Length: 132
Image (cartoon, rainbow, N blue to C red; front, top):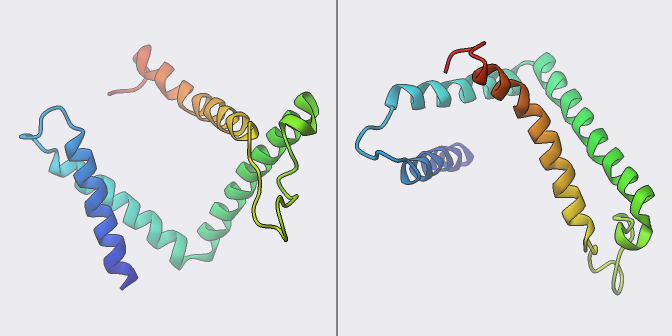
């Protein structure tokens, strides 16, 4: 059942990509097949081989450490009023967490990290160091 749900999700994402395309008459089926194939192969490697799973878990730990350090740096710069402790519960008996303005800082730090990740490839494309 979960595999069927995953298949529906892949088809739904392809449909959303088709809706956002400029020319809906020409669908690059070969490109879509390659993209989905790469995703399936990566999923196979991650779920079937322990070494690749450990690599992905390690990369996830590095990313979480980066997010945690940006939160600690924001708390140091802006204080506990603007960046509250997310581990503390708010309301009666831990009804929820208050994100408040920290959510904006968190998104800003993630946007900067994404830009730093995308910047080298955009630079390579601009100067013709890699093909389009």
